[in-house]
Length: 292
Image (cartoon, rainbow, N blue to C red; front, side, top):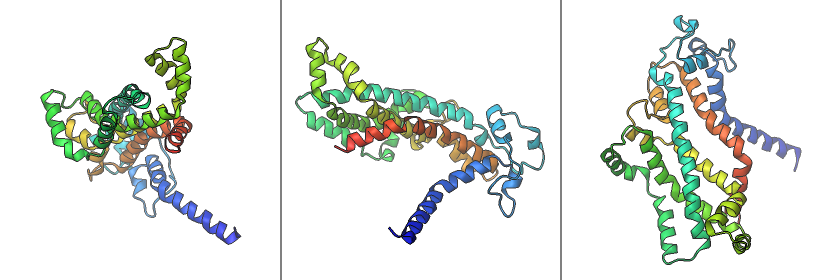
């Protein structure tokens, strides 16, 4: 490859990287500024007077002295200040969905991978096809069911609904991954006295850690970022999640942009931490399941 082509290729890669990371980098920069600096002309891409006051305010909800002056510029809206309680709700909901997905999808996927029974293909096809139903098409029925059960404005309602939407994919994904695990290992264990459940717990699951990590990450990300049902089924901060609170802050024209940017940065930290922590397992799981 010629030097000119390499320069063009690397230049295109840098532009593409900036296209994806530019908004995130600007949010991070804005979170360390106050509103008066954010609205300066020309804008300060790098804060001239970096401060942690925005993070302190959101975490403690006690305004620093600087917020009483003109530096703030705009009002500290309740939507932005609710970011931390909403984050706690999102972590509880997404974490519960992840754990339940791992437990239920493993128990459901193993029989499909190892056993033969009547209607297997039909049931598997139904499970996969159900994931293709648009969420908006079942929004009203789910709302009616949750209301009848008395679960409106509860985290349990979100957990159950998200579980219904994530399980079809995670079951199908783990079926693909369990197919990759040689059944001879389980058969040898069963000869030594293991039952099917023991073989699953002691043999298959330890060998399927990358697939389980990918499954858990998918379930967590979907539940953490879901918006439609979080709006339909929640009313108060007892159950509102991060996407709902941030969307309310985004349409409030009087909101402090510095606080709103800080709230967004705090909200994206858990998914980034999860991706960095399990990235090797997730990559191995996806390459194994889809690379056969």
